[in-house]
Image (cartoon, rainbow, N blue to C red; front, side, top):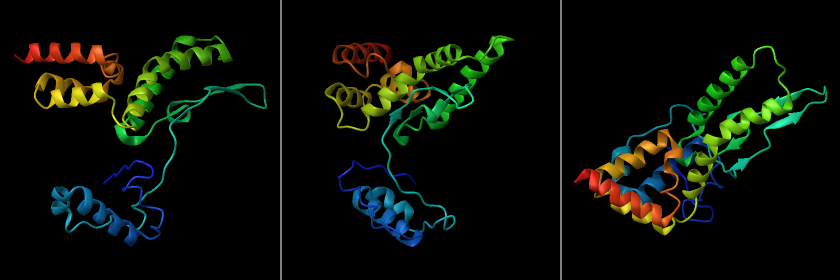
Length: 198
C-alpha cells in the first residue's frame, strides 16, 4: 500500500511512527478513517517483513544535469538524479527507462566523437522535452486541483473516451498538454471526447 497525504493535512500523521508494528497499525487507521470500503478488504493484512515499511517526504526537484568533476571530465545525471518527482503519478521507473533509451541512442549515435559538456546538455535537453511534462503533470496533482482538472475528472466519469485518454496519459504524460493545464483546451478535449463516444 502507498498512502500520500498533503503536508499538514490529516494523513500527514507518520512522525510518531517508529516500529513496523506501529506502521501497520497506522496504515490500518488510515484505511479505516479515509477509505472504509478498502479497509474491509484489509482486515488480515500483515507486513511482508520488518523492512517492508517506508515513510518520508521530499520536495520534487529538477537539478542541473551536467557537472564538471575534479578530474576535469563531465558527468551527466539521469532520471531521478536530475528530475525527482513525487511518486503520486508512478512515473519513477517510466521516466528512468525513457531517459535510458534516449541516452543510449545518443551514446550510440555519437560514434567516436567526444562526450563533452555540450553533448551532455543536448542529451538532457532531449530527455527534458519528455520529462518536463512528467514534472508539470505530477506537480499539478500535489496541490488542490485547478478548476479545469475538476471539470475533466467529472466529465471523465461520464465520457469513457475521456477516461481512457486520462488513464493512458500515465504512459505518455506529454499527451496531457495542453488540455490538462488550460481551461479552454480542457473544454475542447471534453467536447471532442464526448463526440467520439457518441
